[in-house]
Amino acid sequence: MATPTKTEPARTTTETTAVDEATLVAVAAKTPAQKAAATRAANAAAAADGAEAPEKAAPRKRAASTKTKAPAAGKKKDGDSDAGDDEVVVPGDEHDTDDDENSDGTAKRLAAVEPLPSGALVLSMVDDEDEVPVYSSAITGATADPVKDYLKQIGKVALLNAAEEVELAMRIEAGLFAEDKLSQMTDAEKKSALGRELQWVAKDGARAKSHLLGANLRLVVSLAKRYTGRGMQFLDLIQEGNLGLIRAVEKFDYTKGFKFSTYATWWIRQAITRAMADQARTIRIPVHMVEVINKLARVQRQMLQDLGREPTPEELSRELDMTPEKVVEVQKYGREPISLHTPLGEDGDSEFGDLIEDTEAVVPADAVGFTMLQKQLESLLDSLSEREAGVIRMRFGLGDGMPKTLDQIGDTFGVTRERIRQIESKTMAKLRHPSRSQSLRDYLE
Picture 1: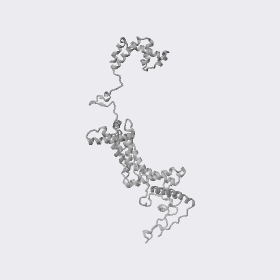
Picture 2: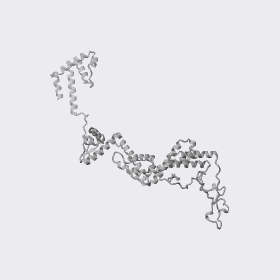
Picture 3: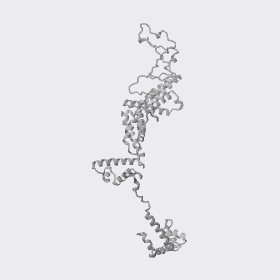
């Protein structure tokens, strides 16, 4: 029996305009992934406006068994072949089927789609299709080792092959395109059929991004192991590497033909090395100087193997094309600080600070001698007149440690600077007399 054909109703001007506007969005897409996502959004907009999506057949609906049965056309007759049997939809029973609607009356999204050509973008139709890792603080069988627990969590996501990486990258690109379009739409436009479809594409891109990130967390761990023991904790290195992985996911171009791990390795290393330059040292050193220090260390190790001894600054300067003074300066910057409380000896009964001389500390013998000298000077000044003693004290700063000029002293005593100079000269001659200076000579030896 031939299936009767359905005559397509003529589209109204409003329907045609809505379809054309949605189609323009699909044409505006530049990449194949963007065109595929936008075309699907255009089809959804057309269906929402009452027009049929181009090149898609409406799904057949099965009549409910509990409703009014169709006439004998639904039964087999003797001699009829199975190929001639058609499913009959009873008028009025189309909305009674449980497979086509949710409990709230909204239409379900069909899981079956038409076969797509090779290389077409396939969006995730089911929310739990992607193996997106779910991390929580409560881990079954958690141990005291946080690294072991972290590795146990990230090991739950299977690794991806090249085809799966490309598929996820295409979905991520479509999601980014949808987010860009949504940012340009008003709130009213976001509630339209096209806006809802773009929101769904954006969420699908976010799921694909989480899946691609979760499947490559073990790559970060393997790279972070190479930088342990350089001033940062292992988990801190992993966290910095994860930031680089996120950056790699956002900038990955699958059309180049390279595997994602090859591209992400550079971003992960770059994030880890930058974090080490900023955080690993007690005293922060600029990134460009850290690169010079690392280069000097590599050349020094290589020359140590070649020469069998430590290279001199002159030999290093020739290899690095810098002056020997600059080499010594860079070596000084590269030294790690050591704590003054570092224990020394087998028993650890002494500290490194005990062996460091405090150049600003006062020697007890010198402190006693200085006190005795001050007392001797005071006794000598007491043998002078009040004006002479005052001029000497102010001229040499014996009281406050701040020597004053002849003009300042003259202003204090109300005389000229020349008179102050004469008083100073006369007083110093008295102090140089052996009867007074002999007691001070012992402090000069």
